[in-house]
Image 1 (cartoon, rainbow, N blue to C red):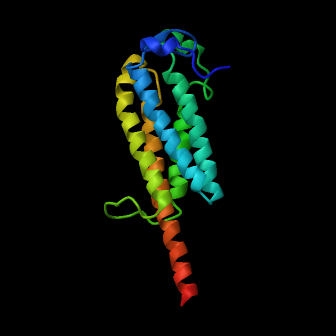
Image 2 (image 1 turned 45 degrees about the vertical axis):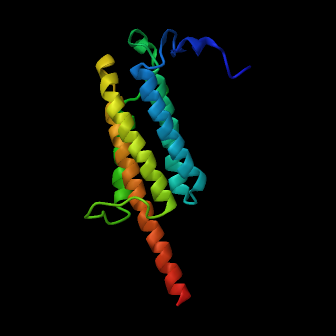
Image 3 (image 1 turned 90 degrees about the vertical axis):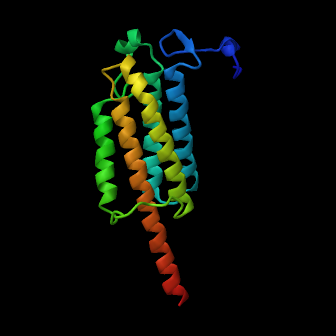
Length: 185
């Protein structure tokens, strides 16, 4: 199988369950930004040493595939979507909220604005967060096409979780530095 099909040379792309749209459509734009978010999360996972962080990243990457499947479906084919496989549902949003609460309990929340770059992992998480925010902004137009979607809420919570994960990792790096400094002295 070849990676190129030449079908998109006319500026269109195929959708799940059939049909084509212009490559500058909101569905393609939104999925492009979600793909960037997923790649940034993959970068975090590639450098992560914490098993819990790796597990979270894999879960997010997998769920973002679900979201992209939903976005890549024409409104008239939405009835063919399957919850949790090709359709984002409220349970997926709830899982994000539960993870935000769980991780928030692991550290003290910053009381001031945070400057990204406390360490490489938190910086990568902040890159993923800002791309998720851009995807959320793009999702506003998508939700006008599919008013019965959880895509906008899901992306809002993803960016909240990524922010929380970044602050958690900032704290983990500080703990490691403190231990290192004590051992050095």
